[in-house]
Length: 217
Image (cartoon, rainbow, N blue to C red):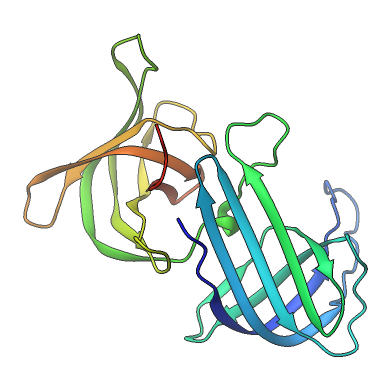
């Protein structure tokens, strides 16, 4: 999916601290407050890339340091970025990061990294399975008796479609980057619909699965 910048506002940027919990957490103050600019999320084969460009004044940014940003789009939708590297610390600050799916040394994508999306319609009786890789034949069950929605990303050409699974009985472990996911369920008319070639972008609740356009798999 081509990364199309979305205008953002009221953006605060914080230093990223890898704190594992326990005791009193660190106090983290913003180094950029109330900024505006653009945020883009794109995919290319197995990679997801993030870019944030902001108009800033008197920021306390350090070059090639890790930061997290929290803000909202023009229509008021909140967003939170994964941690990103600062690549420009002038008044036109730039941040970026690329994550490779299914790479042991690549950071997993968390829920906050999922591109903004809209719901297109409800689904019930959802079953989520993963097809065995060729030449094996068959599939393993991951979720059954689920409920959720058909979704589409709000940006990109074409839009990516998929499913959010809000609830259900889990019988297998979901992992970020899992591919060959197939999901079936009943739409509001009671008809069974099936989605294939999905990738898991968020294993939590709701679990998010999107069809990765441009993949050669």
